[in-house]
Length: 132
Image (cartoon, rainbow, N blue to C red; front, side, top):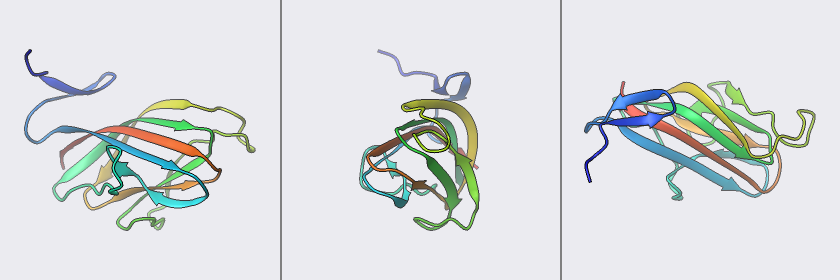
């Protein structure tokens, strides 16, 4: 079997080489509060490495409202809200298991922090880590 020559999601593609890789970020949180997204189903918060940037291409959520903040500290919000899903059963309407294609660049040294506003929630981000 041969190696794929491109990586990416949807119509966004990069040539596969040593400097580009697919990244999956995940968080399954019960409760409310600020959390950093973890790398590939581990308990390790993902921080974009020095000299790289993460390009988020897809966001999937379940049963909740999520706010995303790009910040250099775990749980930090001083970078300002970057994205709000508006799913869930609150004032935004019930849209469980939502799926958004997007293009959001996250600079080196940053975490993607979420504020989860309901219980029993899951979130997955798919992106490509590339040279900055």
